Length: 126
Picture 1 (spheres, rainbow, N blue to C red):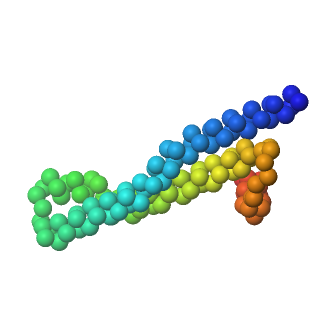
Picture 2: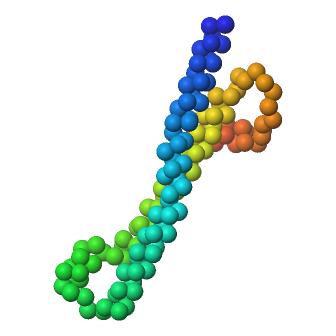
């Protein structure tokens, strides 16, 4: 009985942690699309300025050289994709935690056994 109570407490704690992680990660993940769109718009604007002002003032030229705009364009895209992959991975972990926290529910519920197997296999591969 003591073991059952301990397990129930652990399951409740895991569910709470999963929820606390899920909220900010969902916010970040949901805004990554906008951040990508906005940065692409800004980079297009810079390209237009470069086309229409091929000889910018010296301070702008120096800043463009310091920034290494070509590298920035390339790396920013990789950075945003990496962030998206990270938030997707965290979402998978949260889903696994929620699945674990419901293992001892008294009511019978439909479950997707493939998700549970995938979750277990992925967890064991890492």
